[in-house]
Image (cartoon, rainbow, N blue to C red; front, side, top):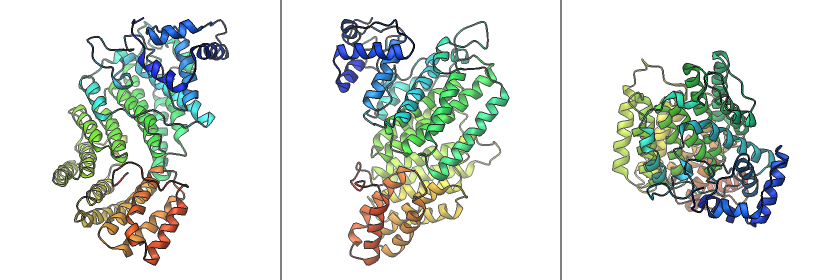
Length: 498
C-alpha cells in the first residue's frame, strides 16, 4: 500500500461512471466467471484501492482490467489502472510525475504487458467494441521517460523468471495462454508468418488481418513466459517486436490511435529485450509517423530524436535514411523548408551510401528506392501547403515512386497518386490532378486503410477552388460517394497525412 491515492484508477473509475458498490459486485461476478468463486470484494475495499493505493492480490487486477476494458470500449491494462507492484501508483519516489503508461516497465514485465494488452484487444474485437477514448501520450513525455532506458543494453537473463529449469514457465503464463517450449523450426515458421502478414498489410491495408496479427502476438507472449536458450530467446523477442510493430501499424491504419501507440511502445520494449536497438528505434519512428499524420509534428520530432539516438551503432545507412525522411516530413508540416531540404539531403546521402554488402533486416526490406521517393514526395507535398513552389518537386518524386513500385504495394501506390494529385492542385493544374485522383479512387475500394481516406479528405479540400470545373465537380461527387458518410469533416490541422 502506497498510502497515496491511485490517480490512474481514480480517473478511469470516474470515466466508467460506476459507484464503488457496483464495482465491488461486478468484480465478484466477473471473478466467479473466471474461475474464482471464492473472491469477496466489498465497497470499503474498492475505496482503499482508490484512496490509499492498496494493490489487490491476483486475480483482482486482471478482473478489473477486463471490466474497465469492456466498459470503456478500449484496452485498459493492469498498468493503466496503476495496479502493478513496484511503486507505480501515485507519484514516483523523489516527487517526479509518473511516466506515461508506466514506461519503461521492468524487463520481466514485457511479456506480461504484451500478453495482457493483446488479450484485451482481442476481447474488444470479439465484442465489436472499438472505442478510442484514451489520449495519446505526448512525444516529449515518451522521449524523456524512455531515453535513458533505451540507451542501455538489457541483460537477457531478465527476460524470464529465475529458475534452474531453462524451460520453466511463469505460472501466470498458463492463465493467459497454454504456453509450450519451442525450437528453431517453430521460430522459423513464426518469422515466415510475419512476412505473410507484412505483405498482406502492404497490399490491402491493416483492417482485414489486424485481429490475426494481434492473436499471433498474444501466442508469442505466452511462449515468452518460458526461458529458452539465449539464441532462441532473442529470435522470439524479434518476432514479438515485428508483430507488435505490425499490430501498431494496422491499428493506426484503421484509426485506433491510442492502441497503435501502445503497440509501438511494446515493440520497442520487445526489440530492446532481444538486443536489437535499431529495431527499437524503428518502432518508435512509427509512433512519430503517427504523430505527423495526426497533426502533431512537434511530438513527432521529439520521438524521432529518441528513435535516432536510441538506434545504436549497428544501425545501417538505409535505416538511418528512413528515419531522416520521417523527420523531414515533420519539419515540412511545420513549414520549415530549409530544415526539411537539409534533412532530406542527408537521407539521400545515407541511402546511396548503403552498398548492400550487409543484408537489411526483414523489417527494412520494404523501404526501397520507391519508398524513398514516396517519402520525399510526401514531404514536399506537405511543404507545398506553406510554399507552393515545392509542389513541382513533389510531383517529380511521386512519379519516380510510382515508376519503381513493385507489385503488391497497392496502398503505397494510392498514397503516391494522392500526393501527386494534391501537388497538381497546389500547382494550379486541375486537369492532371483529376487524372491522378481518379487513379487513386479506382484502387481504394479494395483497400481497408482508413489512412487513405484521411489523405483523400485532404485532397478533397484542395478541390474546392476548382469546383466550378465540370470534371472537378464530378470528381468531388465521386469522392463524397467513396468516403464513409460524414467523414469529410476535417481532422486536425495538418496539411497532409500518410
